[in-house]
Length: 411
Image (tube, rainbow, N blue to C red; front, side, top):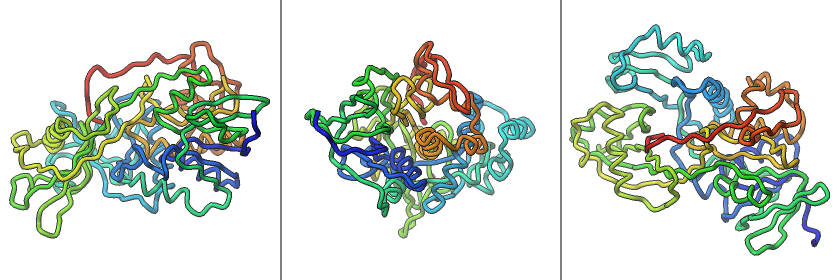
């Protein structure tokens, strides 16, 4: 084996996760080499310019609810510069009566005060958001351009080495070092520690070291619609972002009086076709009707201007995979971010940097990371009987059976 250039830390993948983790390590005085198959950062799903961010407030897994709160606060702090805070409204589920006291109790149980989440009845929502539906107002909800954020994170660092247009397809361990090979079998670099933040490509890399992860692609298509100024839809468009069965950004009035409205997204499980499809745009038109409770609205009035297609990576239990791969010392994973790349990348930067540098666990505890949350994210949860070496935050979890939804839905 020839002697390649050696680095203490290599990050594979320069999307929003890899860029954020690399930036965190650079800010902490480390030297980092980042490698990507594309010619520049944020070339795949992270080329998304309209990613929304808000804490999860549903009735789902308690760990998910706790994790998204931590991740939202970390994301808000990290991306204050590019954070477009327009607020997000989450309508009450169809057929469910609005109960302010019940909602308040639920939000308080999640540790969310009215600066983060506040119940609104239909009239309050109409006055504040332009939507006559009851629900929860998330005033700090925001939009972030993943592409812009990722590129800015990697600018102007003397200790950063960038390797572009190089796809790493195989890992090999020898004498305590990890060696990385490209598609032609050429040895590219070696490292003491490797952070893999390569979405679906993480799956093949793991196979090269005899690790199998339950990762699955989910295609998503976002639609950018144009609405004429005198169309009945114009009076119904939201002034804020919305999240529920699908999501949308605030409608933007253009110079000619027409409106641009971004609505998404399809959730095409198991698909990775990056071509835009009419069926996905039609699905988003139906989502638009449901979001603003305008079932009688003529979907033909939503004229398509453009579409964005991205392929998200999800794990079997719908939580991200973030942390040390204890079965292969020196390997760390940040993948399966799904539709919450804004949140999970901010969280991954803190957690993985603490594990890579083997310090700062007291800081993680102050941020709200408890042992069960670290375990819920750890790669080891997918390996029955696999136990990690204990850390200051405790051992990792046991096996978690992959469960996928039975049909398409919006995320």
